[in-house]
Length: 90
Image (cartoon, rainbow, N blue to C red):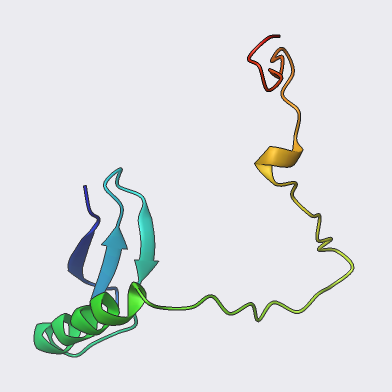
């Protein structure tokens, strides 16, 4: 099931939209718009570019944020699971 866009009025009486996941979690909230038509046009723009958008890391490294490499799943050994040899024997 896909997420949904919801239009709402914020505390400044401006129109905004939010992207809500199927479980109800709010994934993103837009900036302010003066009317629904402008908000709907922005939603269309998000729909067009979100699927092809690249990830750009602009977080500057700091001593308090250590980057820990995450092992690839094939490099981890699961406990309690025996690996089979090429003949299928344990």
